[in-house]
Length: 320
Image (cartoon, rainbow, N blue to C red; front, top):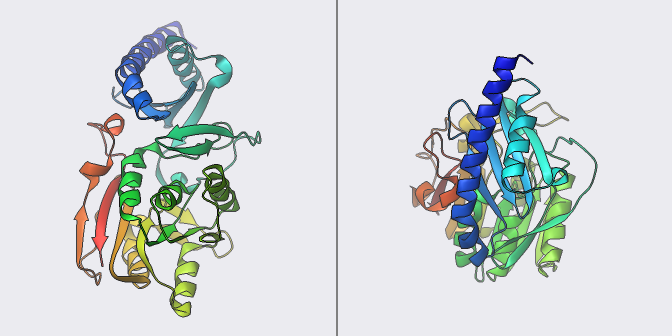
């Protein structure tokens, strides 16, 4: 690497480390009081520093939003600088390349096979994370406010969690007194992880079923069987492809038929929380047979995820 480029990277690393350390000092006591172990320290706040930094109770996950101009030296330099600034040992620093576009759908692509299980706290619940084996760690902390909303509505409800990933919404609903829950994901990794999180929190029971199935197939089956729910979370990947059929899913154009299928298994008076992290999403909800649809994004994004550059997600509350 050329001397000028190395110096530029060193300056960027110092800027990133200073910004992350300042944010950490600002947030750590407040989140400690709430028993929140996982929070964001930086997300591409400086245009030329295309990094994202997350704190996991002594572990650091540092990612780069890669592009063609990315070089292999940049991310390790950024990660090392932030780890040094926060006194995080090398073995607890995890570097991730985040590729833009349709590759985002590869949620479960393995990077390693440590099968590590590290427990993190979020308020009065615990969740297993694995910062080694996948790009995503097992907990999307940007939805911690949304999870509270679900919990507050869950008492006595039949809860449906589609694209459930590791079941954090399910644990919140169960903790909030849901009469039953159904968690659906096509990945065995996700359904096993969901079951483990339920067990970890003492919430595993026959009332909380976990189903490994592609969501459209599940909705079709549920409709045929006459099953219904009155509280649901729908948080699909932006893009995905079914390997067996080659069917591609694109949230931007496919969300109307997906939500129509969800509405078809909801009871009158029920509520759907629908979310996406697609950065150029335009909702098409007008044709849905619903009572109302309100965008609640400003209520669901926590303070550590508020960014001038982008919204980490968008979220709607849909009343049936």
